Length: 219
Image 1 (cartoon, rainbow, N blue to C red):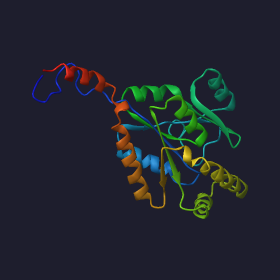
Image 2: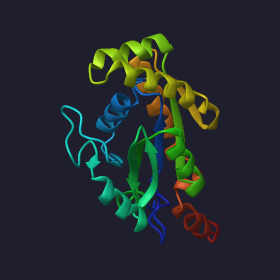
Image 3: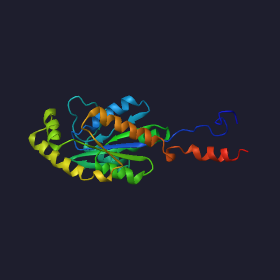
């Protein structure tokens, strides 16, 4: 082998990507945080979910969500095309399998913006690939204020979202990490630290086994 010790049969093989799963109550900032995290990491991609709800102002099909009819969504369920799916607020949400599996094999990390139910399914299906992060708001009062300022939902829907927020928070202990979003920059920094630390885990580097085998043959 050459002086750098890395030009033999195995040379720094490809790292396996990870599933970076983010959950939080609606309005706690996970969508904004995830978009910023992706902007700072070109090898990170967003898992685009499919949904049967109508697009909100400014949302783009194929970019924010894949907007499907309920009939089309159910057909995909029957065909086994979703990694996970759930019905929330009378609408279906699901994560397509193909793009995720391809990204992980290519060494790219996939960010998920999903609820605790979807996070649990992913963790059970791929425990070595999945890293779960729960984002907490600094207070429920501030959370309600954020939802109100959106001016996208009625008061009845906001009340429903606040109740769902409490239901969501009850599952915080199922997550590997918890980030308090009381300051955006600080929360983003913590998420970046988690991502980079998880990338270094031994299970993300399957090439190491072969490398060490070759290393031990040296005299």
